[in-house]
Image (tube, rainbow, N blue to C red; front, side, top):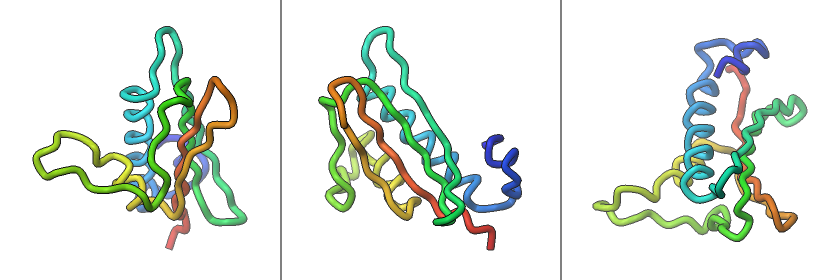
Length: 117
């Protein structure tokens, strides 16, 4: 997460590892569930100093394929090979959710605490 280091977040801060895992899961979901031919996804990182949060937002072009709402996730069967990504995002984040405000895009986002204590 070189962007976080560039913003002055120390390499040893837990948000570095958590943000890497969260961004990876959201990007993997965009690839697996939000891909359309010849269209990419977009990942945006934002520091929100007032709230002490890092926001990870991944937009894709499949607003017709929406994830469950926060708090409505259920664990897959133990033998399942997938289905745990948003559970990880939910566990790492202070808040997460999604928006699909138009017919072309959806954005899944997660906010992580970036206090350095």
